Length: 266
Image 1 (cartoon, helix red, strand yellow):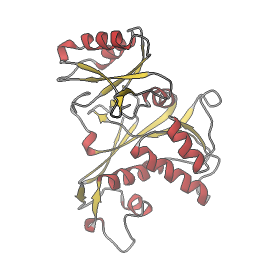
Image 2 (cartoon, helix red, strand yellow):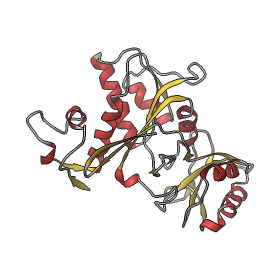
Image 3 (tube, one colour):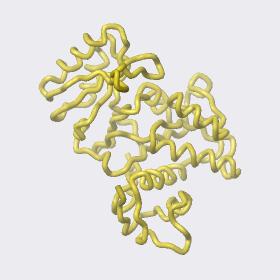
């Protein structure tokens, strides 16, 4: 989808660095795709990165732009002494290919800054993440960071968690997953919850996470209410590893939309 962009608040620099705007051009002349918006938001997020930081490297199409930019700045010598902690095998491979030095939480239990995308953002900056399948590692890394910058396009904004009608993922162990899925669905029966095993391909083989687990996707017809209470209830079910609600974790959300970049701080 191409979006006419009449004005971008504080985004000219990010647009130029993303290769979408020439110095002699105006943002009012641009026709931007959704991926262009993601790239501009990602480049804006990387402006928070400083030399010497330990960085959480997110997963997904939006976070990929941020990781590419960090690698570019390292290569140019504009960033130095960066240590990246990837949130998935895919991001690990991407970062290695870009020459970004990598480590883990065992060696660096405190992360200065994490940059990642999200599948939903509610008005209180609570998130749904994990439709790409990396929610457990994302939550571990992003839960250890001092600052968590989230980058999204405006299609990800919702009135309440689950409001998009799309999946809220829960990572579960493979053993008796149907039993676990049934308990999850019954837990949110009043919200019209439907629980489905995530599958891949024509043969509908179960999707397996980097951690060797399955994902049960929960679909809600209405709000599930108190998110912290819902979180506690989900995690109390034996067989559940982690869920995709990221509650009170984002410190900054950068939203790219038709009217420009909006920066929301906690």
